[in-house]
Length: 284
Image (cartoon, rainbow, N blue to C red; front, side):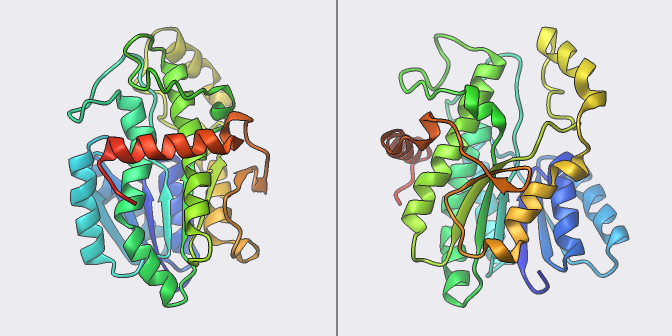
C-alpha cells in the first residue's frame, strides 16, 4: 500500500481507527474522518506512535449532515488529488427517533445516506486515480444485521414506526443495495465497490442507546471480538492483491458470502439508488 492514499470514516475509535492503523502499517497515507477534532488528533497520534513516519491527515465532519459532507469532500479533494481507497465505516444506532437538519431520520441519514453522498462527491477523484492506473476501491462497512432489514420505501423516515434495530437493519441493508448498484455503474471504469460484515465487535457502537437494548448490549460486550479483529475484513477488502478487480460482493470473515434475498433483488437496488440520489440531491 506504499504510496496509496486511503480515507476512513468513523476513524476516531473502534473498527475505523484500527482500519486506519492497519492501512498505515501497510505503508499507506491515511486520512481520518470523525466528528470530534480532539479524538481525531488522539487517533492520529496513536497511528504515528505505532508507525513512525506515517502520513496521517484528519478531517472533522458530522456525516449525518449533507452540508458537512459536501464541505468535507471539498477539503478532501483539495488535500488528496488522488484517492485509492475509501472506507465508509461511520455508523451508529440510536434509541429514539431524531430528525437531522436535512429532514431525515438520523440512523438513515448517517448510516446510509452518508455513505451515498460522500462516495458520489469523491467519485471524480476516484475516477481520476483509476485513469492513472491506481485501481481504487470503495469499501462499505455494512453488517449481518442487513439480513433482518427491509427497505420500507413508504416510511424511510420511520414516521409511523420507529425501533432502533429496525432502523439500523434497514440502513445496513441500504449499504449492501447501494454497493451492488454502484458496482454495476462502475463496471469497466477500474474502480471496485464491495461491502462487508466486520463481525460483532466490542466498540462504543451502542453508546447512543439506553433502555433494554442498551442494557443487553452492555451485558454481551465482554464476549464480543476486539476492534482489531473487527477491522480485519475491512483491511482485506481494502488491500488484498487477490481481490484486484473483484467488485459487487458482500464479505464476512474475510470471504465472499451470499447476502440477503432482498439485497440481491436488482429492482430494489435500482429503486433505492433513485430514491437515495433524490434524497441527497445528486445526479449520477
